[in-house]
Image (cartoon, rainbow, N blue to C red; front, side, top):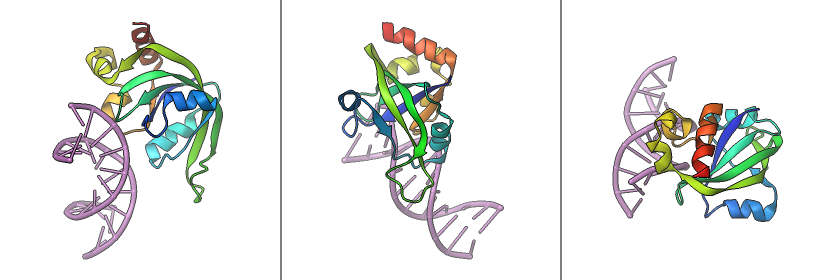
Length: 135
DNA sequence: GCCAACGTTGGC
DNA sequence: GCCAACGTTGGC
């Protein structure tokens, strides 16, 4: 069981879009570090859903429903995707500002590697962020 | 809209 | 195989 954080620009694909669909395909990754994380995902893993560019906050939690499938938007066969389902929406979204202000989260991949669209989250970091979402 | 950070590409 | 140039991402 691993924890992750996936980013999406809400004007392209938002939390509400995912909820409306019921299940979403996480595709379009064209970065090797992000792809390695995607391939390490297993069914049942949980991930924070983060809105980038607009919002800049974690809005909820998704679960991986299908692991490591070929990216349907890619015809070279090099890239991977996963399918996710919404699990829970946060009552209090956790903003990037709040994450940066929390010393325990100073080393997380979201802060250190801001351009990585699929980041790994440690169990400790997961707990801290979930507690912040209870607000 | 700007700019910094980082990954990728391509010339040598 | 190195490194400079370029493109993309994402925070501000």
